[in-house]
Image 1 (cartoon, helix red, strand yellow):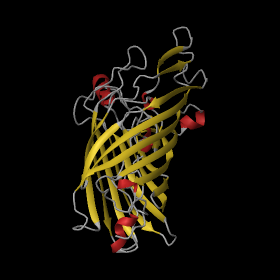
Image 2 (tube, rainbow, N blue to C red):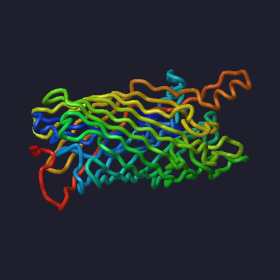
Image 3 (cartoon, helix red, strand yellow):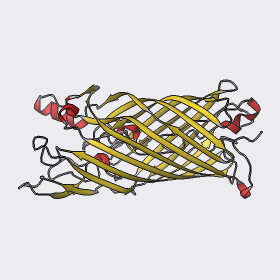
Length: 396
């Protein structure tokens, strides 16, 4: 799903990731289980538009060959995501006149997450995710107003907010061969720039060009030190079909990062965000190929779990149907998925509600969302002692 304004860039910009692979026989189940959480939800979490869900990704502790990395094994993975947000929503209602009048805000956002996962003990693993972002934002209202009719672009790029995490698979493989779940806790580090600046035309007191912070939705970072909670799991239904799911929640205790889009404006929030992904993977008759179908929800909530919410954010969520395909050969896994938005909702923010109470006048901001997200992932498993083996098709 995709939004185009602050940063939940609802495709949860931050992509959660893709298909788990299934075995043709129970004996070989682990040979066909794919990364369930290859790299994500751009929630800017990579989001999909103006709802600033910053791009986030996660890595599963294992892939085929065994969904659980053995002590000393490692995984290198990369995930690319792209979305084009332009459809404006206020609540669940699309404001179609924005496109008809040519005043829509357009975000083109690109994310590349590089991850390394290492198993340091039996069923225990640690991961590091390093994200890079590039954003282009096109609008009229930021450059002299819609009435002036001049459309210009602002840009932001660079390192995003890095994440480190440690996780644990709950069940021993020999005891629960077709079902398992992993829990992980981590930190989101404020390595991305929360106050990147750009040129705004016709925006000065006398209509001159000024330099100031770009919109929240395209800032590389949110300025907060966050706590991440992640879960991933799978359950085999039969020889060809497996259920899998992921959950990600970012707790951002910091209320805001102090960045203001202009003098006198409310500072940008460092918001919580979360993503949920549920689906099923089917092993095709073509060797190495699997197909996936699932659903996902990416959200920037109105209120944070910890800390205040009295700062500028565009809360909201996007629900998507996610088809995907994956291919494995030896230690290499490739996957592609395209979440397609079926529901988008720009919810009423804390500041909207506060000002509505003070003035007695209805107040509900809008946000731009994308129709779909393109997600491409690659993963390579490194076996202990550099021993070469076909981990995705090994017989266990």
